[in-house]
Length: 492
Image (cartoon, rainbow, N blue to C red; front, top):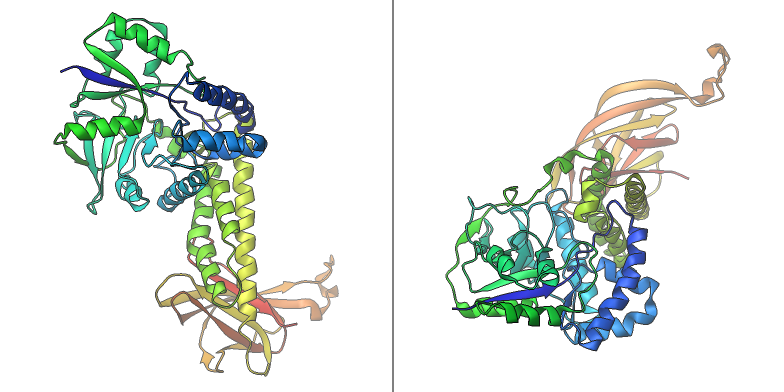
């Protein structure tokens, strides 16, 4: 039976690497003119724009006059977009971020028309064990990838990839990279390429990707395929898309092997595992922001909404998108030029400031909503937040600063809360003198570290009253990575 090779025109658009995102954008602006002109003239039937929408967002933000033209080509099925926001790394980036990446990409793509519901991952450095259930969770049942699969795990390049929870997707492994199709542009006889591409393939329908990093569109693809047809009758090469390929594969009705687990083998392509430890400053900030968004900010925003503080969904999405731009496989790896890494770091710092500022605002506003009945000696208030969806008996450790070391804690009903004093430190807050004897005794205060156990409601918060002789201020030693916030409100 004659084998059919689906030649799929595409570009792999690295968001940044040895060049910056700004430099990449300039090339994209000119590239998109060529792509849309080629599709409009019929020189090319379809073109895959790397499966990510962040570059579309950038392009149309700078060239808004092209929006109608771009949208028309997407709706006609000629320009293939989505489903990713950025081509994320799957092994450095958190699972929640990967889900949000796909959701953001699909939602953005739907503004323009059809979104490719294929988990297209041409260049990520390995495939996570959890991807089948993540794909299924957003309505994707197929995936195409290159790196990570070894013949020890699966000798066929078509297989069913299954998760431990039973979720599964139809998977296709690209042979020897997303750039091999350039052979047919440079040589008339496609036989060597077809022999290479069919290795390991069970099916009679096989993919030949025609593209490359920031590669131009091949406007002579029809001419080149016509020449290939004249040089061999054994192989049939057609201009195609991944949707057409999977339709043809489905009609073969083959029983495919079932595979589970992650794919991190370097048998046929590098997976660059050393990037896991490069640019620690980037990876630390990314982890901090991911945890803040998932464990603090979003739960707090839901809790605040119940109190009449309207949720700012656009703000949340903006912060997620800011860090997603640093989640692309090249960006996340950190193996970039200094100028590129500076831009990546600036995005993380922006997202860090935006997320922490939003958390601070929400806990302040919610804390103010719990006022005690009368102030009866109230010196300050300590508000504890539990952003997890179940009640917790939480060990609380805080440092309280007060002029008087003697105080008590009460709940909002006036009940006393017992605590242990861990450490007391006397500190001066006035103008420092060489001779400490000249210090004003009224300007000394005590930093008192205390510990106590208190029940925190599910997805809720409680306020405790600090009763004593002077106004106080409080700080917490809890890390931002913990899913609990502590806030102290000073009495006016």
